[in-house]
Length: 91
Image 1 (cartoon, helix red, strand yellow):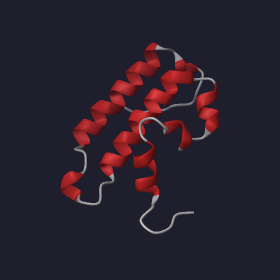
Image 2: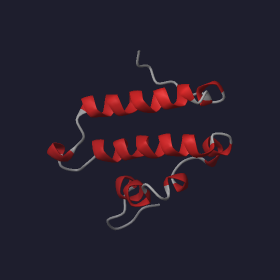
Image 3: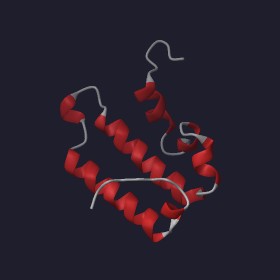
């Protein structure tokens, strides 16, 4: 699927944030709309930041955790979590 310098990291990175919907399963977007897309986009941004080739350029785990907590809060507040199986095991 990938060739030359294109790999999964670069593919996702090049799609963000405008084309986040192109790198996720369409069924995740069908019922959730913009909130799901916004949360998935942020999660993908964190994923790209965590997988930087040079370790010192990677996102700090505390920042990742706070970002995931924020996405969980947003999903809970909009009640989308009841319609989809999104399980983020943070208290």
